[in-house]
Image 1 (cartoon, one colour):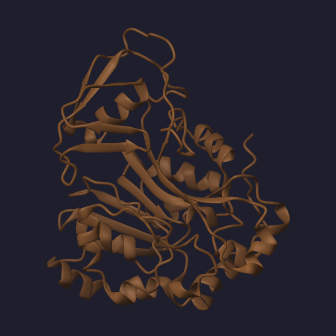
Image 2 (tube, rainbow, N blue to C red; image 1 turned 135 degrees about the horizontal axis):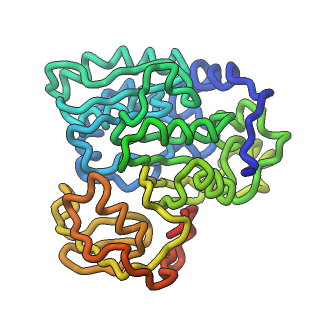
Length: 353
């Protein structure tokens, strides 16, 4: 079994207090874990960000920008939406015909999100709200009415590490995603397992460190819940800026990673060669010249690229399929596919990363 803890001693109330009362602004953070300095924003995300209310932006504690392209008309679920920054960005990107559900356990954060709902819809020019904020726990999405196979895209920003039962979270993610649906999230990962003595520390947990998953344990967990291949799109080393924090947990190296995964029954736990070739059409808005599936798959417009069976499925059996042509199928197997990360890039990926 994967050693992913379910810690009965973890104080959920203390964590809610940390995000609801102690943290009042981004400047209150003690590390760079929940900050987005240096993040790469797609043009449509950058444009939408300019329309987000300051009240929402000032209560943002994410570690990336987990907003994939092609969200128009989608149903998006934001796990741990907080004050609503990413939920509102998704709201703008899905448009008036799409829908966003934001879930958070902290009432004070949701109060900020809901207080800004009417004014954000006016700024976006939407006649009706397309965002629904719900208070609940990401380990039990059924309790707040999220049905099986109902979500096109799930996003999360530096939140999944906070859960004391990550196996339940990822099982729920795969339950509610539609077949071919995408999980796209940013979070904190550790280069070694965090000692059990630090798991219940409210500050280390609130700073997204104590609950960070060891990269190998995350890979095993994803395999166990039915996702044998996932991809890292970008990452950075996290600086522990506080001498006190560094003294307590500085023996561990932490990384902020953005991860892309799909709910696909056809994925294998290793890269296999079927002689398939993928060609990107250049038609995804904002990506006319190339599309980066992950940190080592850049598909240039019009250029045939030999891909493993999993990569072929990711660009063919999802909402990205209309923008790619895949030649070949899995009728003939040619052995293992030699696929790895780009030179010099550390990854936390699955079969092909």
